[in-house]
Length: 159
Image 1 (tube, rainbow, N blue to C red):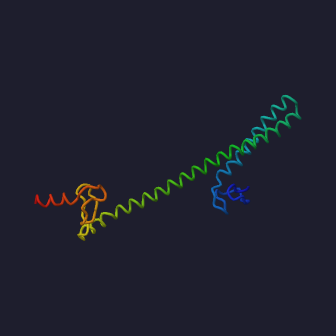
Image 2: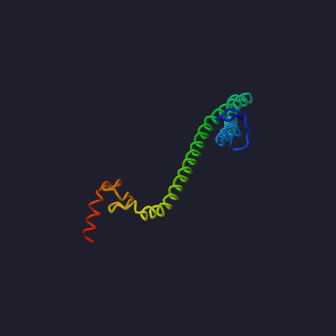
């Protein structure tokens, strides 16, 4: 059996090419489908050929049916291979997205401690409108775009 990715001869067993590490599950399905369809089409061809032309027609019908079945098996096996590889790619993308999401959650869990340290240093303050951390010298919030200096001064007058 040849690897459909790198073209090298590989053993039929196993699900991964030992050379290029490509998924071979679809290739095995193609071979199995070709054998099964070849045999089924061969039997059907033999019955039809035998009924119409006798024993010689049965043998010819089996051969023609077998060849047709093998060709159909490879065509369907190629479609199955593409579907299996697409599903494996989607699964890998989902796993990567899960990893990215997990890292993002972990970084958000560390954020409150960083935020506390930034506010405690006095160099930063929270925007009273959107609650994002901004520099204490800022007069306009870079997140919501609102004026921060007026709110701070109005709070100081009220106190």
